[in-house]
Amino acid sequence: MEARTMKSRTMKSLLWMGNEAIAHGALHAGITLASGYPGTPSTEALETIARLKPEGVHVEWSVNEKVALEVAAGACYAGARALVTMKQVGLNVASDPLMSLNYIGVKGGMVILAADDPGPISSQTEQDTRRFAQFARLPVLDPSNPEEAYAMTRAAFDISEELRVPVIIRPTTRVCHACACVAPFEPLPPKPPEGFRKGREWVIFPRLSYESKKRIVAREQALSDALARFNIIEEPPEPTDCGIACGGISYAYVKEALERTGLQCRVLKVGAPNPFPNEIAERFLDGLSRVIVAEELDPVIEDALRPLCAARRIPLRGKADASLPSAGEYSVAALADALRLFVGGVKLESPGARSEAPPNPPARPPVLCAGCPHRASFYAVKRAVGARRAIYCGDIGCYTLGNAPPLDMVDTCLCMGAGITIAQGLRRTERDTPIFAFIGDSTFFHTGMPGVLNAVYNNSDIIICVLDNRTTGMTGQQPHPGIGKTATGEPAPAADIGNILNALGVDSVRRVNAFDLDQAERAVSGAMDESGVRAILFEGPCIAVAARVKPQARNADPLRSGAEPPPYMTVRESECVGCKICVRKLGCPAMSIIRDKRIAAIDPALCTGCGLCAKVCPVNCIVHSTNGGEAATR
Image (cartoon, rainbow, N blue to C red; front, top):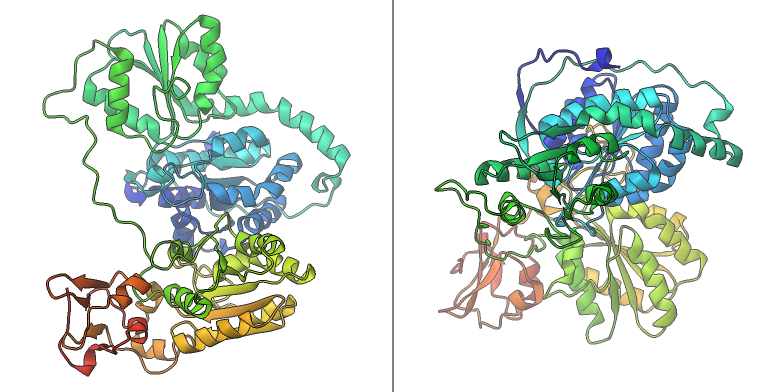
């Protein structure tokens, strides 16, 4: 195994982001297939492979994580190596095939990138993939920097192939997005698949599962031995009875905190937390009188050390006794302070070094972009509903930001695809209230379609609003089945959401231009006059995508009918009455109020010329910049 992948590092060092390092680690391990679903902080890994378009490697954005894992499993059944990418909540979607795949096993190596998001910075949860690995009895590797992410990915394929088990690599946000110079190993060509060989081993019958469970338990020692090299003990220059156990990015924080403070501690770095390295942990505890555990998210290492420390009567500190926070990200400064309290009486930091946290930056809540079609869609619904009570069920995507004032158009948000199904449950209790379910185009393909079918089958009475901006917006404008190209930019059949809704049994489907406020409002009013499952397809391109397209090409886009709008909108100062309606109703970041003049202003650097504000203005003082007039700008 070592001879196959861990050849000498003959290539020069290259500056890679953590996700890029994982992508190159997979490519250099000889993968034949890479699949996944975009989700911050994991997205750039598969994007890197798609951008490189390596010969002999199939790359795809699958419609969801479950599909991505199953596609990869098929390749691995035939002996190929495959990488699957997702974020931590995506692992929930993939959990059904993953639990069963552990019982079936793989022939070719399979590595699953499941990126965790402490904070959380861009996720619904702070869940810890190490816990999932324990539950699934799967090995997991926890890199602390991009260099380790590369090396661990390379090694994970060999471990997976040798022991016929999927291996999870679990970088966290700061590892995924950090950059470092990585010295690559000599790349391997894509591993030629042996071909699929028929046999009972690939069919998961109950009897096979029973035998597989015994095999899974029995192999844990072999897994522990194979992963032992990633768990190390580091001795300080001077003798000490204090120990710190850590893993992942927390190891990097600990090392810098020790350097900053000058404290002397023995360090246990747990790079492979499952199966837990008990033998190495026992050696780490020899001669120690106290131990603290530094790890983000769940107390995985802490819980594993607790019985070992209890047997030796060694006090153990960490999350359980509130020595360290139980939620959120850690930092060098926070760990430096905690280590001072833990060690006690040791010299303070060197002169000039800072341990206090930097001042907090000014609050800047996330908002929908200027020119975002979702703002126009939400406002059209809000204006059509008027003073009536309605419930707005949201979903996961950019449009979740519609929950903020002044729109206030997202009353619920649980997980991907749940907006349509939660709306159905609410409708059974809120019988006299219009129920709207908002879902984006990418989320519709991900997990929205089963909810639509369920609504039709069970005679629900809801209005489904599909916000189609022709991309996967929040994660960086990745393609999906509705836009006519693959992950590598190759042409593909474009799935029409309207036709799919019809095929699922939705007879009432209205298609509108999101920026045509009057048309969109009429569509919403018409849908409210009906009953049953009806849908409105709000079409308008994501401004981040449209801004990268040449003007003449944008004119040809059916989602942007008519002439290309001017670069930005402007306010005729002499006509503005200072009513603030444009600012209060839309919340566009390009708009503000000039306090001394008490009139509206539009920032030309942010404005995209969508024209929605002009349609809201009661005195028609907002015009296209080419129309002349006094321009009120910030």
